[in-house]
Amino acid sequence: MGRDQPDNASRVVYAGAGIRMRKNTSTAALRAAVARVIDDPRYRTAARYMAARLAAERDDDRAVDELERVAAGGRATGNSTRP
Image (tube, rainbow, N blue to C red; front, side, top):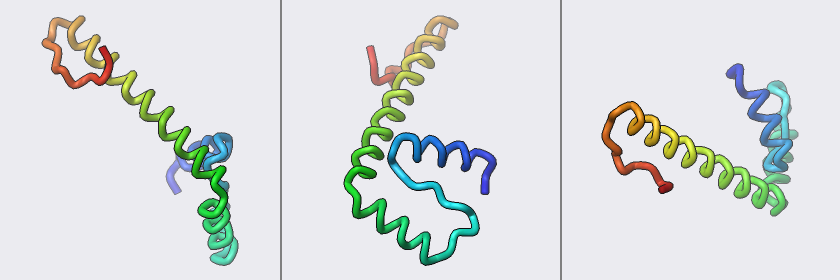
């Protein structure tokens, strides 16, 4: 278990994209949770939405990185995905 896993699990559960499991969860309970997430389309929809939000944040960071590089006197790399 990494230190960030409980926080990440909370975010996934809050977004409706998954179920929080204890580290000592039984195999049967884990199997049932996986089946529930796979079978219920609401989890897939929430996961897609979460993925899109994370991608947008990543793209925003790229644009900021590019602007900071230019402001510091560097050349634009053309790698940002936004104008």
